[in-house]
Image (cartoon, rainbow, N blue to C red; front, side, top):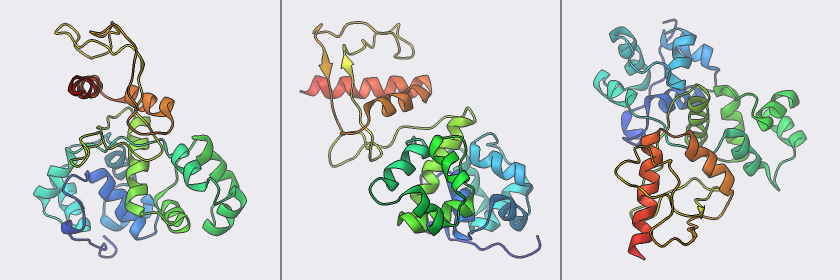
Length: 251
C-alpha cells in the first residue's frame, strides 16, 4: 500500500449496513474514484467493484485484513458484514430525477458538480452509474446524506449484476413497511392466496372475500415499487405478500 488508508470506526455505521455500502461510502468520503481507492487500500480495482456489486461475498483472509484495516474494523466484523445484503431502493436514475425536480436543471447540475452533461444524461436515462468521486459531488450539491446515496447506488448496482436486495425493515412505530421516499406499495385487484402449495407467492388466485383489494401504504410511483418487488428473491416476494395479508387480516 503506497499510503495509509483513511479509517473510520465501526461505531460510525449502523450494525446492519453491508460491506458493499461501507466500501463505496468510504471511497466517497475520500472523494476519489473506486480504482484509486482500491489502490490505496491494496486490493485490485476489479475485486473491489465485485465486492460492491455483490459478485464476490467471500473475500480471502488477506483481503479481509486489508478491508478491515481500511474501514477501521476487526476482521470478524468485516466478515459479518459480507453476508448482509443491501436494502432495496429506487433505481438511481429515478432517485436523481426526484432530487432534481423543481430544484436543478441538468445544465445547473453539470455546472455545480463539474460532471459532464453527457455523463449526467446517461445517469438520468439509467445507462450508467456514477463513480464514488462523482457520487460525493452529487451528494454535496444536492444536499443529501452521502451514505443514503451510497445505499441507493449499491442497491442499483447489485440488481444490475444479478444480485439480491432485501426489503426495508418494518417501522416499529407504525407497523408498516418502511418504503423509500417517492415509492408506494399498492396492489390493485385480488390479493394472491398464500396456500401451502404456493412456494414463491407468485400464483395469482382469488382472495378469501373474492373482492378487489386496494391497499395503499405510501403515496408515490406504484409501478416503480412493483418493479422493485419483482426484482426480489422469490422468498422475499412471498414475505411481502404474507405481510400484506397479515395487515388485511387485522382490519
